[in-house]
Length: 85
Image (tube, rainbow, N blue to C red; front, side, top):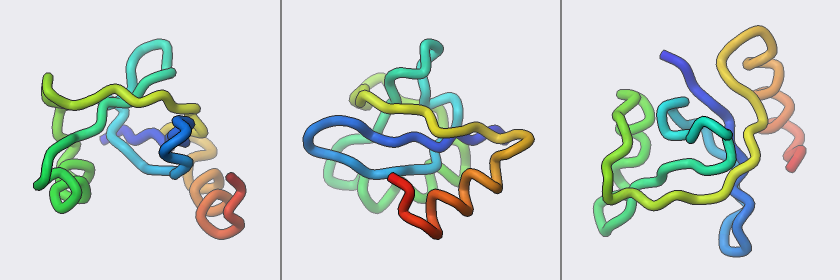
């Protein structure tokens, strides 16, 4: 499983999330995100299972902070322990 750390950069959302890399588009500027009343409760299981994005999901602007690989866990620890964003 490959994951990507994204920083949502829309005026309405300034959060950092860990998502399956399949949710991030190739230029790495947009992230698919589930919508609907059940989406909030389902996010965790969708991420854990690396579900593929559905066609009805919205595309949100992001800045990619890192992906699974050499420095992945170092990046995670910096982001979530120091509130680097």
